[in-house]
Length: 184
Image (tube, rainbow, N blue to C red; front, side, top):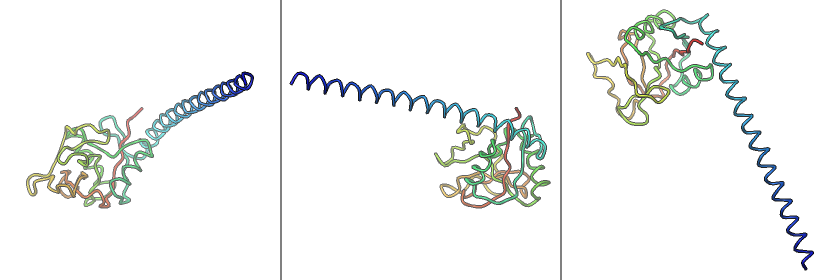
């Protein structure tokens, strides 16, 4: 009986040791995969920034690339992210004006674009794509008091017919977009 208990204990100990080894291997694999993905994303962003500056325009130290293909807010945002950037979000009045002029020339004088701002989390609290509160805003307030859509219009757009003023819009509407990329 004692011999059987020792054999059983030895078997359990061996299985336990194998499980611990498997956990270590799995943990190492996950860490290596995470490091690889981080390096790939960093190098992808650097490559995209260099390419984009050749085709787009440079505004206040960032590269902007227009996309006239109309997409929902989420599709446009994912497209910019897949290229290593984000939907454009002007930080100053001058940057907003230059973006407005670029959109008129590259997409058209009557085509609005998605901005990288939304109030999906909390109505009335506009956030950029990093989740930070938007400091610069250029809402249309002379003709219509924007943002005026309540819970049905949670995504921001820049209007070329209203001289670069911002409007809120349903995120499901399809609009052109401009991706912005940091210069590296």
